[in-house]
Image 1 (cartoon, rainbow, N blue to C red):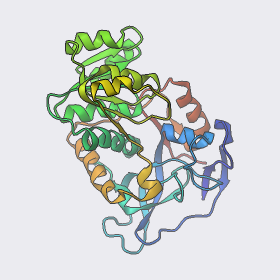
Image 2: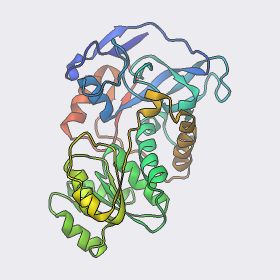
Image 3: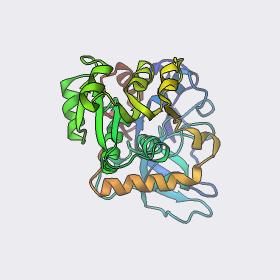
Length: 331
């Protein structure tokens, strides 16, 4: 089969097209004829060598996948040849990713694609949805009426988090960097937007919560955004972050008796821990899409698999809003 591979860490130009052995579905696995995938920040870190979580070299990256099952292994009970599926199922240690003609996946890591959304669009959702679900539902157990602050409302995880929080009855507030992004965030369900370039944290906490703070703050950005989250959180509030590879002063967190949750969504694939729960998370994704409560925000520029280097450059530029779609065109 043809695939886009990397032979060593480096900048986005390390990708190259290559012939690779065609995988075969083993016990409990299916083989997917890939139709689409999407880039997540984790793939940038793996490609750069900043996170030692990628497959062995020559490595085929990308966790998200959308495609059609063309082979079913022994013991598979939920799927058959011809099924259209999506999932977050590879691109990490021991698991080939989706930048190829075919991808083998554990059946517990995929689900039948939603019926009311194009397969290519649905393929961008699995990793970011399950990240937001783990953070807001499993860790923070958000409740109707809670004031939730989401940093980075038009990002990959952020735009899904807005919709998920709204579906559970929360009051949703989000930070953005422009009027254009504010309009997008409102169209996704945000009750209020905050231009973090123009308004200080203390000021919008006063304006929106009468100085009490938000009961849950979801940091999808990291760095200074995590420090801002401690400021924005209410006393005994919860902060949840997906980017904590940094050093911070926890004095304010201590003074407010905050709870800090850290979510690293790659763990089920890396360790096998919690893999049995992935099917339920994916089922929640499909249910929300089919109820009309969740839709993907697709970046303005889309790419073919052979253009993955340009897609990485686009994500690194910071210009992309939402998820970058990569369709399976000729490699």
